[in-house]
Length: 286
Image 1 (cartoon, rainbow, N blue to C red):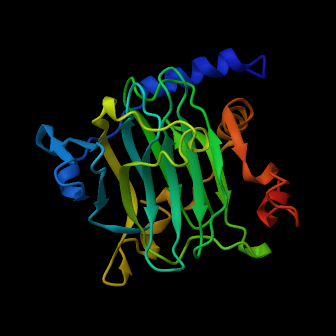
Image 2: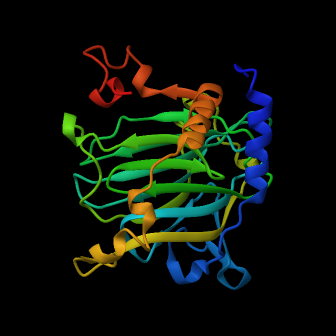
């Protein structure tokens, strides 16, 4: 690790990971399994959802509701062992050719090698804003909470309550921001061995199939979009929906910097070879 404070921060993050408690929700009330011919399953009376992948097919689910801003939490336990070639995607997305999207993607790897957590933000169909991370724990050994805070000012990606990425609303300098299109929550487990692991050099070992990822404890403090209207009213926004104006305090800004210093492995904002005409404008802000 690159910092002398790393052991202390690791302890803090570990304690936070173990102390977080979310209100359990019945996944069968909030989600529909949409593809996979039985490879997606509900268990424990709807408290646990699993997706599996074999050589014939992967599987996926989506939320029944659409959301326009929210704080979304889900606990995931990723595919264990040799997961090379597999991708577990968990994301928000709208429809259409100029869609908005907020992505968590977990890129599998050979046994003993770390997962890569891949993040991206699309606005009006434009993405290319990838940041990738290793994690400070084994995401296959237990459930961990992956969160998206999406409000009109910013998007914050968090893991076990620790922020790993912030994408600010910079429309003032011409950067499109997702704020007008309601999005559903989607997740899928699929084979992407043409690119997922070491650029496609490591292929999926189908002798290890089926591959399974598990989900529980979904929680959404969010504005539900239905019939062209939001469940959040202007009078309630600043009181019951404090997340609508939430930003990071100094402690969380420090944790974000620590994660990005020690665990970020790719940042599009430093990839000058990819952008020879100049980095995207949001990369030039503090």
